[in-house]
Amino acid sequence: MGLDSLFSPPSPEGDAALEALRSVFGYESFRGHQGEIIRHVIAGNDALVLMPTGGGKSLCYQIPALVRRGVAVVVSPLIALMRDQVTALRQLGVRAAFLNSSLDAGEAREVERAMTRGELDLVYVAPERLVTPRFLDLLDRTDLALFALDEAHCVSQWGHDFRPEYLQLSILHERHPTVPRIALTATADAQTRAEIAEKLGLTEARVFLSSFDRPNITYRVVAKNSERQQLLAYLRDNHPEDAGIVYCMSRAKVEDVAAWLSAQGREALPYHAGLPPEVREANQDLFLKSEGMVMVATVAFGMGIDKPNVRFVAHLDPPKSLEAYYQETGRAGRDGLPASAWMAYGMSDVVGLRQLLEQSEAGDAHRRVERGKLEALLGFCETAHCRRQVLLNYFGETLAEPCGNCDTCLEPVETWDGTVAAQKALSAVYRTGQRYGAGHLIDVLRGNATDKVVQQQHDRLKTFGVGNDLSKAEWQSVFRQLVAAGFLTVDVEGYGGFRLTDTGVTVVKGGRPVRLRKDPVAEKRRGVRDSLRRSAAGRGRGEGVSRGEGRGTLSPADDALWHALRACRLELARDQGVPPYVIFHDSTLLEMVAERPLDRHAFARLPGVGARKLDLYADSFLEVIHRHA
Image 1 (cartoon, rainbow, N blue to C red):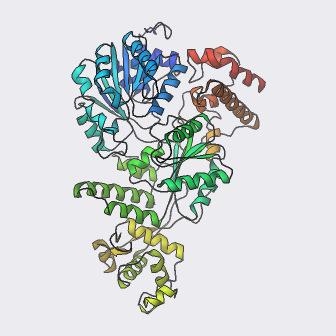
Image 2 (image 1 turned 120 degrees about the horizontal axis):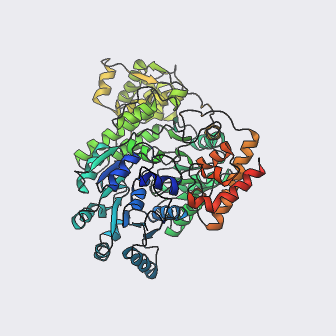
Image 3 (image 1 turned 90 degrees about the vertical axis):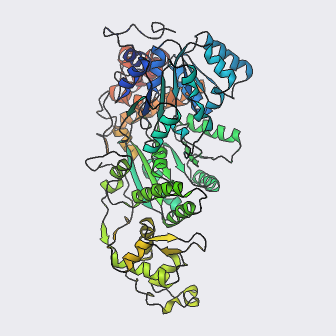
């Protein structure tokens, strides 16, 4: 469309990218590598961008699409993601559209005609459509600005979001060698990075690797003990009115937990691949357009969610790897405001994950890779050190000092010499025939002469009663940590009982000390909701959210204004049938609370307020602010 029709004339420095950022998106400066990436692509170069969720990846191709001549084609894997991106861009006055199966034939032809006439800046398309002869012919007749390959980790043959058509995307460069390409992903794994470059033909592209630290997220892992009540207490104490995601392993558990939360007074919906498509779409739409909805879901939900004010991600079942954990928890706090990642984790999870791995029909090489990933996840769960340091270290990044914003930093974990306890536990496993799980073994160790113990004559063993110095909960922790550390494995061919590994035998023989962590007795209540509110108090424009609790506390008057602004946003969003966050992010509302602009000139200086949104919404929000002045 040309720069002049979209935003004000370029600055004296001629930096069209920065002018687009300010006039269209309403921000004064780029974050991190954004500016360098954007100018690299505008100059016609290829790029592979690895940036954490919430780091601003979309701007890295959206701004070049506005500055370069022609139409930018964005390859996106999910219809919901395309729709949300296009809705948000149109709110900003950007000419954007998508081509997918949700359009009828007439609507699709209109988008195609607009492409060839140069009437669009960005077009989102799924990889399945892009590689068809019809669409490739359409590209040949279109003036192209760039190709953006979003969620590029989908090329990974072992990725859970694998889409085979992604492997054919090298055809874009073959047919249009002068059109720059930018591939983007939030996946940090080095193996996946190499595969992306190879499969997409981007081995010569410049790689932009950002820090994968998400300092605004508080990480917490708790030992399972009545997990539903733990979840409810966590939501009540930290997120009583916030939107968030609860991940469960099975479809049945998803539906049960969603129904249970609803019965407890929390607005909750289920999402999994077994639901009818129309139900999944309706539930996702409700989640996006509400302010405080909890979505209970399997991992089928998440990759296409562009909702910036997800304040928490909770796992009632651990994921299979730290990569999955990083991706899933990264859906919280995309707006940079305080958020939390909470996981309940217990013995059954450790056993179940190991069973799944050992029962896999994959080849030995793949199983070795997956075994290493599982060991890293279990190590993260059981660590007594800073969780953020452990997480970042897995991805090859070093955090020099403990973060101060995870449970092990906020409430340091005690460790103890568990060598003798480990020897007792391992001996009990061996003397009972390596056939039993933790429950029976704990009865033996604590000297509980249950019917099963007596029937098996395990009350006559030397290990019977040698462990009554520890409680049942403490022994559960010991066994969980022994399995996590690889001293015990699970018999997948028998009854799921424990077996000693070679390193476990070494411990029994006294050849290796064992240090164990003490599970905290109870969680301390720490309100992330209050952290969110406090982050506005005294917060300067353009200043990032610091680790930890934030600064200051909102007064009752400011809190009332915050709720009134949210109500105004929700009403405007419902009138247009769009999610509230496409009107303004929470961060912009918090700036309204902090700055209290009283005229359009002051309102225009708020971050996130571009020219289009100034015209659309300034008067509505200024009216609310004046009422609370």
